[in-house]
Image 1: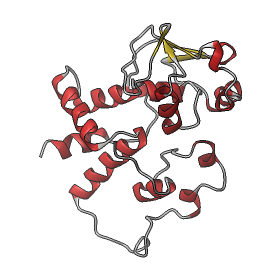
Image 2: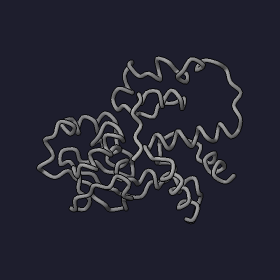
Image 3: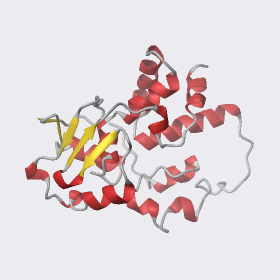
Image 4: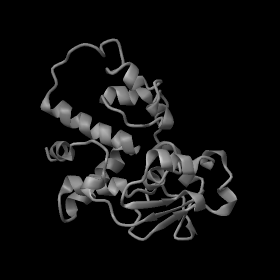
Length: 208
């Protein structure tokens, strides 16, 4: 599977916004996007004329990179969203939000989606009492994500309660840091998705 091995802060600088790929570092004065808010490279500060296609492409790339999804998988999500009832762009974002690795991140069990994906792959979590190791698994309303007793002492989960208190939890999720448990109260709606994105630009890009 393809894997990005360069500095993750370059991605945020390239997309022109914080994608919170480095976890807590993104909230400090060490954040590369805050220190150098322009694209990387020797021509990063140059003023360029941006076409409509470039704007649409950047919006798609920003969304794909924020959720850590590869190009083929992202396009598959779009095709599924297009076949569902409702607004295609909203359907796309809802499916991305319902990924298990994203839910683990939003519940405060990981500092970033990348770390959440790694934890899920290592079988750290259970879903409704059953061990799962598929980051792309789509959660449903009523699902319970939990860390079994034998995994609760790993260093990554040492500050779960503090992370939840500092970062908060989306309204469609319920986090119980004391018991290392999270519940999906309902499926996310468009207003519940805090990630700043114009999904209509992605729809226009794929509709060409």
